[in-house]
Image (cartoon, rainbow, N blue to C red; front, side, top):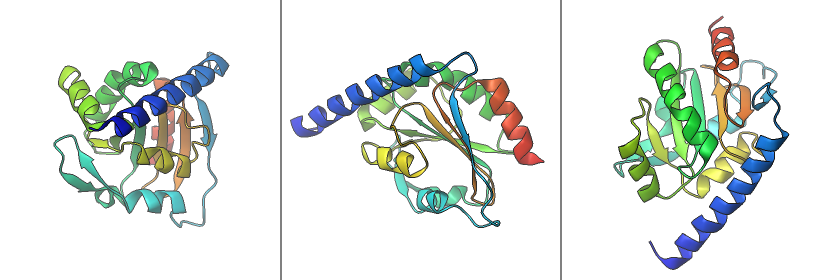
Length: 186
């Protein structure tokens, strides 16, 4: 990694840390800042279609088409290894994904970090769902899915029909998430 990329990641990490801290301070005990979306006449949201059009590397460096998740209920978690709330929620998110086993929904993680940092993190903490390297470009992808402030963690719930159902900015409250996932099935 050259110095230009390293400096870019450092600046981005600092910006996300500040934005995350601001979002964290503004949150109350109710949990993350959430946004619910109205249906779009059973047509996929443009943001979800854009997500499915992406190809990101997995942690082994192999390109993976996100189109493989099209037509399946999906929880997309944007995170970084330097983001404390991201790291704190990942074990419980991993347990939730493992318990369901893809029967009713799938979870993927998109890391806004360097491939090296993400791979080192994954060696320390075992995660049961696929992790992809989004790098700096994933910031734009998250913004397209409603993350105007660029804070992390940022999670997006997408129905099998490609409609964005809800977004969560900040650390997840899992009781709330389980209720949203149950409503997704119904």
